[in-house]
Length: 349
Image 1 (tube, helix red, strand yellow):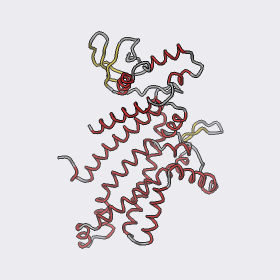
Image 2 (cartoon, one colour):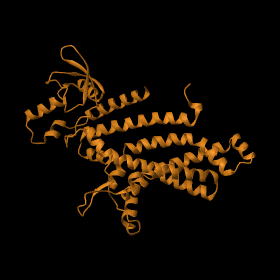
Image 3 (tube, one colour):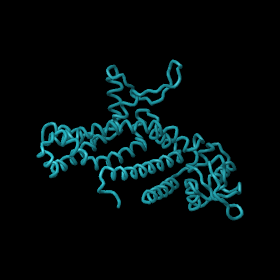
């Protein structure tokens, strides 16, 4: 229910925000040479000739999986097969029908394609980048955090803390530029990596589309810098708290090896807040790292959103924001479930 309320709030804010921005969607669709009559037809088709409150109801009707429609072809809510894949639930009145359908995010102003199709085309590359980044961040962040906690107040601890603060302080767009230039241009002979590149690229020799996993290394590392720093500091703090507990001292007093105490007892109980943090970071990464993808030319959700912003393609931007919000809500629900599995004390009775 909380997730539903969050999504309802996001939909409302997104609709109001993008409908107060300047610009005529009908003219963007038809071009600058469109005549007045053609513009009126497009405005009517998009429902732009209706009051803002009616437009909002239309937008909710498009997004909702269960919605009310009209059988009149002249009505905006007409059941159009080009808009929806739907199944009729039941009819009522003379012309109204309740349907179950796929949510409709409308069409791009520039390409005329459905926003959902565009998001689906670019989702795979963003998902691969996000998964690679969070795996790197989770492994290195937990490893450095444990080392820092076990080496508390030593030179190793201070160096790791300095690196983590630096990693959290540097903006991602700046670190992306530096890493791309340094490892993709200056040290290109040693690394063999490119400054820019996507997962799928066409071979210059005419061999068709190729999968370039080497192009994943630099953007994944860049995207993982801030999560590594945050996870390291959180793991360190949590480990220090757990290591001071009585049951850890009891385990040590029983003669258990220090490695067993750290891994089996301390680390397991210290991971709860870390898992929560990783999940939130993964949601943001999966939603698309706009600047990182754009700088590295990685054609994911972030890349297509940045391109849509430069072209004022509002349906793409609105669809991307709603997709981001949905990902956050779903992942947070999954995290709550995982949290209960890790720690039975937080389960709802």
